[in-house]
Amino acid sequence: METILRVLRQEPIIAYFSMEIALTDSIPTYSGGLGVLAGDTLRSAADLLLPFVAVTLLSRKGYFRQELTPDGWQIEHPVEWQVEDILTPLPITVEVEIEKRPVKVGTWIHILTSITGGVVPVIFLDTNRPENAPEDRGITDFLYGGDRRYRLKQEIVLGIGGVRVLKALGFEVRKYHINEGHAALITVELLRQEKDFNLEAVRSRCVFTTHTPVEAGHDKFPQDLVHEVLGEPIPAPLLRKLGGEDYLNMTLLALNLSGYVNGVAKRHSEVSRNMFPGYTIHSITNGVHGFTWTSESFRNIFDRYIPGWAHEPGLLVRADIIPDEKIWEAHQREKAKLLQFVREKTGMEMDNDTLTIGFARRMTSYKRPHFVFTDLERLRKVKRKGNIQLIFAGKAHPQDFEGKKLIQEIIHQSRELRSEIKIAFLENYNLEIAKKMVAGVDVWLNTPMRPLEASGTSGMKAAHNGVVNFSVLDGWWIEGHLEGVTGWSIGPETEDGKTPQQIFEEESDDFYHKLEYIILPLYYGRIDWWIKLMKNSVSKIASYFNSHRMMRRYISEAYFHQIILNNHH
Ligand SMILES: *Cc1c(COP(=O)(O)O)cnc(C)c1O
Image (cartoon, rainbow, N blue to C red):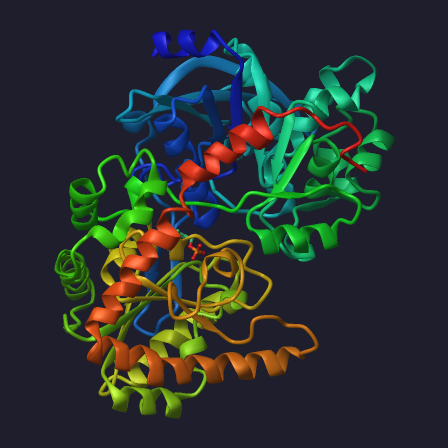
């Protein structure tokens, strides 16, 4: 440990800050896509031997463990994990001020190691210390729990506490990478340390990645709350100038104080530029960590036919050289594993030769998890052309009542259709279940309301396993989709001049139509053609939508790039 930290002190590092990071299921400090992206970022950083350190919150009680009642209602349980058994304590504490009280922040470390010999230390911040007032000890308990006040306290610990911890550890930081607005208070701490509040000096050290395509999704705090909880680390008028008058808007703050800003897909960057006119917002489309998200069966065939693929995922463009039967055997093996898992968890017997559709992600309105059930008569008509079965998974945020109702709707619909279409819901979606699902289904479905899917990444995971995407044209899919080649779109190409209702009707019509007349006939009648689509998913999607390509772009464009002055407002 000491050696690792000593080596990292020898050169300026990239410090990556994220409210959640998905490393393994035994460290349950993540909720979904954002955390998985952070985890994949660090896995690639380690593989590529980058001088990198990550900072996050301990989230001692995790996000939550999901259980469904017999009636399909989600119940949340705290996740008990033995921090002491999994992480190593560091002898470093720093202090931050919250509501004018000093709050001690302790540190734990996990060293992410790569097969290449690369390492990335991940530092977890913890306020559960005897010196702290009882209410402050719980600040780092629940990921995305509590109210606005609780969230602001967490963001003080992450942004301000995190910068102080890196300093106490003796790191020289080349760039602070603010992964989503939650960590934007980094900028306030850096500004506080600057003589004369030199904005340029802070901008030259900060990189900001925004992930939110809607105004309402941005983290905002009323100024009186900010005054009470944060106080005045920098003069209040200056903070208002940088972060907003009525509310402290964390996205705005990060935009104003970062020398490089990007969205996570081309479309998302456009949407962000429209939301924040006048700012230069670049685009680096997300990717997933190929080795992590490729199943054992596919790793084996890639190793044999495309050696070196894990380090240079671009080589997957050659997937066509893999014999058809190898692809099919590998897929059927992963499918059998998934269906066995479904059997164990739900008692449902699914069939290995039936077209299986997967849908798993956060259960929330804009993702429209109930889209399949829009027109049950048409769904029945589809099913008369050829059998289908569906597997769902996903958690709703504890305060997202609509999201919980959608889960319940899936459960109710699956009962309604029980004698015709098998539909399983896997409880407590996590990394392990995601790995099984993205490898074991035949078709990966995504039905977001446009343009609300900033990127989405699960379809990229599916493509690494030859699973074919069937999705609304939003987020990354706009860049990955070639109709009938890498999968299929759902709905029109652009929204231009159409009402939301028209778009919805086109989408649902397209969905049932393609399922009935293209997807089912291909799957049951033209397996050679289907396997071609599977190979295309690898050669045309996995070869590009991976986090090694993404990191190489962050390195050359965000971390090691001249600061273009007047690149900001
Ligand atoms: C990949 C992943 C997500 C994100 O899925 P999207 O379809 O991109 O929203 C969420 N949760 C888990 C556990 C994942 O592995």
